[in-house]
Amino acid sequence: MRNALYLAAAVLCLGIAPSNSRATILNFDSLAGGGFVPSGYGDRVASEGGGWGYVEGNGWTPAIAVGFDALRLSDYTLAQGGLRTWGLGFGDLSVVAWPGAETGYAGVFMFTPDPGYAVRINSFQLGGYPQRDWENQPVLVTDENWNVLWTGDPHVEGSDLEADTIVATHSEYAPGVTRSGPLYLIFGDNWNIGIDMIDFDQVPVPEPGTLSLVGLGLALLAGRARRN
Image (cartoon, rainbow, N blue to C red; front, side, top):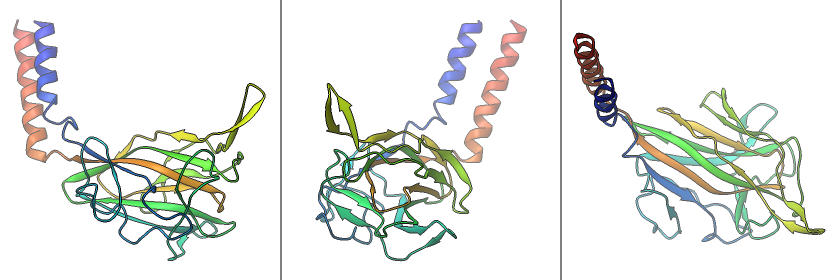
């Protein structure tokens, strides 16, 4: 009976699991290196088109609004200048997005879900320019009030030593942070840190009635198990 209870509970919980989550992966290969990331890039992605190339994860993200900018770290204000792109030299990454100021500015991507949805930041890549490592770099996920929800390794790789040979490389991050409100992804403190392959989900948020039904079902199952 105990095994049956666990099985039934698992089936009920499937109703609130993020099985309907959908992911978009932002890369910048379709953008010319040296220009600006176009306004609207990554916003409410419903297909790989729109004049830009997106990578489909396990679906698309039409319920997620996306913005981006350079962030002045001295007072956490947006520079209103956007982000730039570059082709080569940020580790082994191809085309990346980076803040356009030499120092004191991070890049920030801002993900805002529609009502009824949450956003999850799955993973992303950072590379150091010019194919070198950088220390003490802010790598954060925050809410819209800059409260830190996740902190990544501040050592950003751009090169590595393999068999006595220096080779280009990059750092991989996997925050896995989910929120039914805005999430901000912050990276670097200068123009030598570039970002690529930003993988994020839209996740349906269960309505309160659904959660109540699941709770009632679990309670009934528990009562039946006690009687048996």
